[in-house]
Image (cartoon, rainbow, N blue to C red; front, side, top):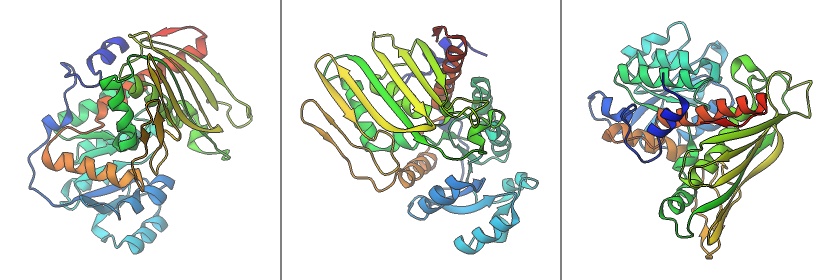
Length: 361
């Protein structure tokens, strides 16, 4: 295992790592396909309302199969999407996907507490693995997920749809090219009001809490806008509904320090609707609102540039680009190492909130 600082240093954006290499370098040689078949594991809201419809709008992949523990869901999906019986699995016969040539990618859409287990199972079938965020419960679990995929010569991508959005890529380009000089200050927020009272997001054992779920968007806003990895964090957790958020944070405010001297003030919540990014540079500014919406994000810069690349929804672009990378054996936009970077900081943020102390990364 590596220290947080060593990992962050070695997997910094845009650098080659002596510890972790792009998963594509371990990709196995398989016959070329025009479209890759994806099996969704877990048929909750995100699979049902977002990913399945997105897969009807993709060009390089399609919904080939499902894994569910609910027979009624299996039957409904079979009829709606014309899924063959041989491509419908449950959690007991999951390993048999290894023998199904229709399925090239297993997409894990389960609570975070199950990501490690099912990434391990999926990798051992020899299929590529997509996994929803947050990547896992801990950085150690993330490292284990990366390792099992490399050991089985399959690729691992984390479902950070935003990095496929040309609007997000626009402010990442500003961070790289520095037309306004150095970043001085970032404010980044992502949250929504969640009225549910008995969901995995309120359950600590299942990986609940706003920091891992919406917090990674606020965190990514700061990391991608600066183009740096933070070196320290302070944080404050709170709740206005202690009867619901007994085990996990409803709201988290956290402050990041970066090597260049830039600082970020971030906020995430399941009790407040917010979605924005503001960046102050030496010689200008950039604003995004929303900064992590499904249907594209909008912004402007102090030089009059408008950031508003049209995008109907992010997920079809994410799925197509990830599958193109697999087919062409090129690096994925969001490999497992990117998920690991965030979870290292998420863990440190929770530690800082619990202790009231500044935590170095």
